[in-house]
Length: 309
Image (cartoon, rainbow, N blue to C red; front, side, top):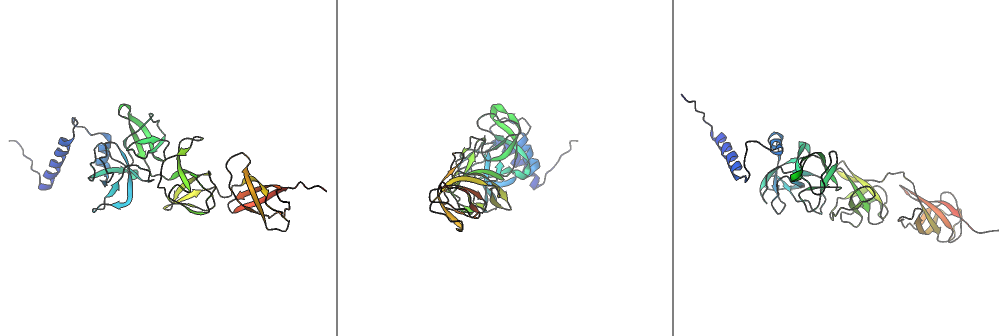
């Protein structure tokens, strides 16, 4: 006698959903699951809602709009744009329709497959999401490490996802200590390799706190610390510039008025108008001088006085 098995109502619904999912997939089903789907099954993906304004193709990388959820408290998935974000998810091998729910693997979930753009990546490289794309690209702020090129014919790589915790920035102005503006008036996030840095294209950036003043065209790293971005300005570093006295200086003067500040190496220099005279130096108007900058301000180091007896 043939043994019969019966399923309760919940089990039946789950079987029906699984069958429909396979039937709706346009590809031929061979009874196996790709690595990313297997990871979804074992990894308990984070339920999200597609808020990208368009369908998200398979094997995409998408930033999470932290703090923004739908009515069911599902985080919103975006398409990478000129708005900088530090958290990302991998969608796996299913198309996510606009406005529909989907599951993503996030940084804490480990590894997944994602499409890459451009040259074939190399194991160990760190790649990032490029504004305007669902793929990863080289030399952008890194959010994943290349583990292996999974299928070069389909531009698929196996990656380990992680939150962005350090970004390279370049000042676009002389900025006082404090919070830097989130537009590009104070700084710009950089992409590229050493010596070939360039604007990464972000127009809405994180608020970075700088504990000391920064100079136009100055490069610095920003680190994610205790829920805030801090500028790593290497406090204590000494910078030296050439200048001229703008007026006579007596050895009893606490400060020297200066102008014509230039860099010894020919690079861009800041534009301070005074320097502390802590060495009791003296000089005449238009005398050459050397100033130094540390984390607290500018100081007069030397004055070259040409007067003769």
